[in-house]
Image (cartoon, rainbow, N blue to C red; front, side, top):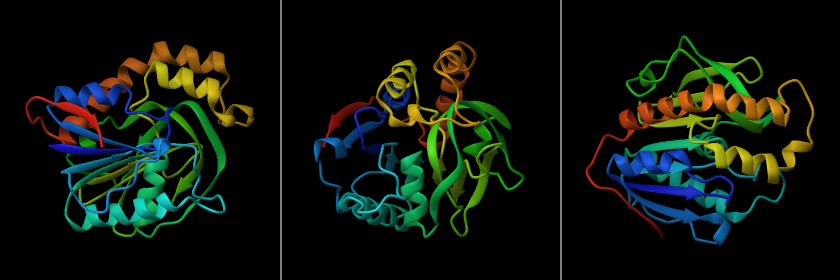
Amino acid sequence: MRVLVIQHSAADSLAAAESVLAELGHEIITVRIDRQHPIPQSVDCDAMIMLGGPYPLTMENRPDWIANEQALVRRYVDDGRRILGICLGAQILASALGAQVRRNAQAELGWHTIRRTSDASSLAVESLPQQMTVFQWHRDTFEIPNGAKHLYESDGCRNQGFSLNDRVFGFQFHLEADLRTIRTFLTVSKYRKLTGKGIQTEAEIMAGINRHLADQREHMSSFLAHLLPSAGNGTIHEQ
């Protein structure tokens, strides 16, 4: 498969997911918004992954590329392609499908437990456990698009994931995060200035790496293998 990856910032990369996709034999084509790459106008790949980034959809004066990315999402959905949106990517995906994106009641920074909802059922999501502790880094949340299934929830954020037709998925959490991702977020993210119930200290976040990161990588690998089956030898390049 050819997988289009839309990366919005240097900090929010494919991280651990890059090697998984390569091992599955997929060709990765990366569009870097932080390097002023244009959003493609046509559906040229078999699947698309949209990563996180520091561009909340609740802000005023959105950059033009957000509307262009939403339009591309609708083209991929209409063409029956597979999509995974992560954090900001999930919010762009949800909004492209007509759902609201808004400020969550609390920010979630660090390791938080999510639970599968009673509405969750699909081959891909069944590759994930009923409950798992995942890395979170967000203030906003999405509503579930019409026709989509509500997959996961947490104590601090009800809408943690959704799926549409078992081929389009939005995850608020960061299954792809690796040690470098976490250290980068702790260093550069303006969210570190926030305080609140869902915000862990740096010591708590770093301690959670030993307890949760290996399991999280296994969950991500299992999910991607179901969503994007093995295809041979993989390659990686920027568009």
